[in-house]
Image (cartoon, rainbow, N blue to C red; front, side, top):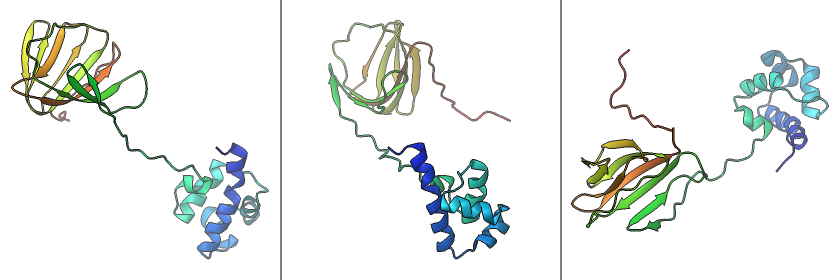
Length: 190
């Protein structure tokens, strides 16, 4: 990983290369940006430390994002590669990589016969049914969730869920106690 000094040292050569590739003189660039020829020359040679006040008009003049001028590191591969895990009778695919905080999972849950004992634990859960039907037993109530329906609940309430009439695929967002998600069914009226 480059140090701040190494990153800043690379700005001057990048500025010079961009200007020369576009066939622009220091004088023309000075007129476009309002930065003196002397300052531009010192920036390109590394004799002047770049600042945001200087880099913003240069990025605009060259029609490039600011991170191209400072040589921001490439962003890593954003794809996640979940590895399915078996948890009792469910298959769970973690969709988040960080520990703690809000966690996202895709779950494939079979119909549960016989019915399991309701459980309680710390946290807050939000379920969204993708495919199949889900039976949610929550604090003594039985609910059937269809594809496209969601439920959120405090996991300190006795609960269990499973497929209803077969396997169900669902998304689960599970967070620590006190974190709640909100699903808006329709846009607010202005």
